Image (cartoon, rainbow, N blue to C red; front, side, top):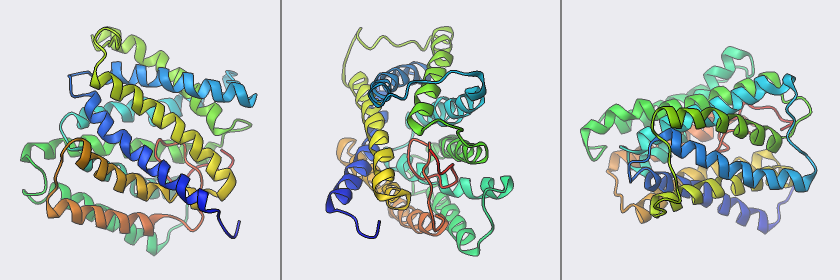
Length: 311
């Protein structure tokens, strides 16, 4: 569409603020010592309940035929379970603002993977964007004054595994397609698969959480984060259909910025000049790496550009 209603810009802002809010909420969720498997299980339960209602209302139920299993496994593991493990582990140590900047590196990882799989063709502009992204990461881990504690540097590579997995998932979905499924059906089925995987792991590793046993701020933050993610994801899919994927993908910039601002407010965080420089450099890198036509992503944050356009 050539023009966009003002309400679309408001929706875009709300989406960015919502997704950005999930970062400090995740920090609060791990503040009491909750471990990843228990957190991920209950997060997926909330996602399943929310998206299950949406799919039922839309008349698009979950499809469990064997031909879809490979897709569900990749999306469930690379788009939810594994990246969330690394995200929560690093969130225990790294500031929320740093986590927001690191998550914005999804397109930086996606580009080389897309080139290897043949999903994209080489472009110097995007290579320059990749260099900017790398510079942003170096500004975080390089100078001693960038992080509040020097020991935090060890957790940055762990945090980077999350965007690497998101980028891998997006490229594999782009390579394989989703056949006759839409994005919500895929996310719902993948969440069911992820829940089935994390339940025994949470029990075996003694990471099980009973949210109702002592429901406090960490448990409320977990529920709020899951609900926000599900609601904003559904809104994102709706906005792609109404305003186009290129317009909707601009939420990625808002997610990063809002994640930093929410962390400053809710977690009372402050950052060095190196971190602010890293944020600016990453924003430039994201702009250069994005292709001229951005397609919809299955990743939790719409920053992976190499996914199937039919989702």
